[in-house]
Image (cartoon, rainbow, N blue to C red; front, side, top):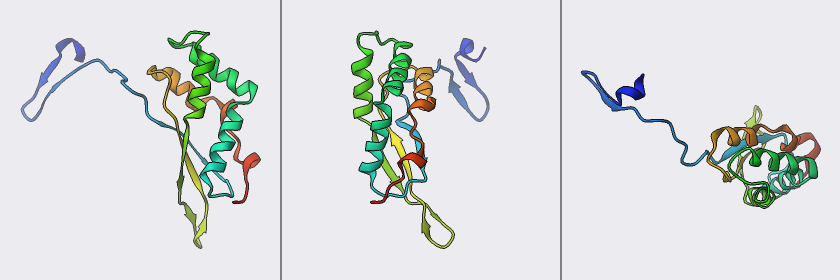
Length: 137
């Protein structure tokens, strides 16, 4: 109904209703915590290694094929997606000033399809469990 009328006007506001389009999905995939390192390169390598394991990589490829990416293109696009991820360290401290590092994991989506992006964000097989990857700098 809102889209059918297109322009809406009230005493205090006028707005235009347009269909929702995703030009570019968000870059933030998820946040990791409980690492014992503050080295972002180590965290990135851990995520990279987890995502390039066979099962995780196949899951990513299968998700990409659900979008407009062909079966032939999907493996290369999945590897590119993984290679281009980046990590940002967030300084979290708990009471007593004890450092509790958190990391935001970012990546550029190979598709603008929001449902595919959500699947990439939430596929547990390629989210490394922090207890397996805790390391000291």
